[in-house]
Image (cartoon, rainbow, N blue to C red; front, side, top):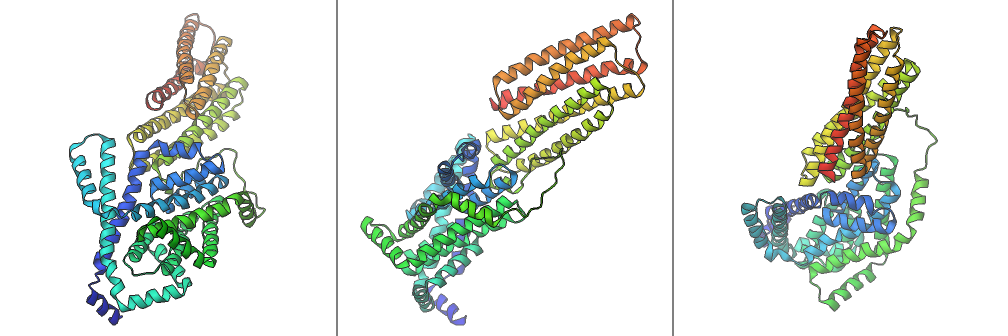
Length: 554
């Protein structure tokens, strides 16, 4: 140990500079990913929603999303979070995971251009724009320029600290050992990536060491291969405590990278020759040479395994086959899974989970209404308990979604995502109020029936007409939340106006019955107007949500 320190001092190696450079590099690459997510906004959700319908599109999604997030580990964690929340199936995830392995090479290629010389200018331009611009979009691009500058400045700093290692006799001996035993290189790559928790940083260090002459190509490539295994630890951590599909996806990620490493290790001399030959033919710099090797590994692995994706899926399904235990699930329960880990990876997709919760709420509000209608029509007081049970689920969803949205609001959101969050926050409250008013109706009707009273034939006719409109409004509201359209908005507006007219007419008719001293029970007399009012409020809140969709979504 003392000899190492003495040699380090002799050649001017400064660990502080290296660690500082690594810190700036990691900060830059993470910040770039976060800023790109903000810039992408809802487009990231659109990409994943529309383009994972088949394996070829899924492959492209993996490439694009990883390029945006600047991290295959982030894509892996995001995919597993989507599976845990129910937004993506295991089958959809496989192609995306393969694509992410290719997408992550973009960072190494970017580093290979060795743009450190422009780092100060990128920071200067970004800071200048940041000081004088008020546009949120322009400010986001200014942040991006600054973060790119910081990334390459950190890489330069790290390179300055590492390039003297080749002058150390102990490091030269270590490099010889790595060149002579590729297995040690793989282990080093695995360990470095697991320790730093960033495959891009590990490859950045490797590119710097190779560029400085500290490592030979034969010693560098096994480290590169080990890096691809080490990066799978993110998938394992993300899958802990997750669903069976999440665990299967993590296993698939490990399996693909491990098989690829085994293939390339068995053909290492050929791998070295191809990379060296291409580098000489195209005149690639040494940093770009490692980037090409990284790209070649992931491309060839994908080409070899992609045609057998269905077989791999079947194989993993057999490994994780059902144990025969059937989970008993209550008929009425919250279906939406509010996956919190996805908030950090993609707040936009977390908003989609909240949206699914809102859609579930509108569906349950329809169910509450059906119970209330049966209560009125059949005079079966037991329907009240059924309505109350479903309304409790609506309340539970309201609490869960509201807390989830508050958590999302603390993340970096684009302007459009911020508006979408507001729409969800207020709409969730309105659906909860719809449930409350329907339960008010159920409570009032139950009170009437418990007193042995009934409603007059005229009152039943009035309530029947109102309930027909409520049924249409709630059905349209559920469809509107699922797929916004101006047609449904106009239908809700029209039916809500008709509901107001019917409620007013029923109220006036009730007053006339009072004036004409039509016989009725004291409880029904006291509560009938309240029942009409509660039904009318259901229409109002549905109209509020339609207004927000018109303003925020369409």
